[in-house]
Length: 58
Image (cartoon, rainbow, N blue to C red):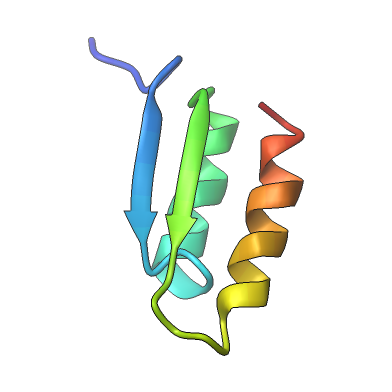
């Protein structure tokens, strides 16, 4: 069985919706790092905030 523990994963579209849910789930499963990316300038602050909050859990 392969796990995500200790992996670093890039997720595009991670500022909301399914991408955000995927980031949260991966953190719960023990992923070592997540780079959340969204091209939208409007969402930039949300992605930055999410990375900051989630990185403290790593």
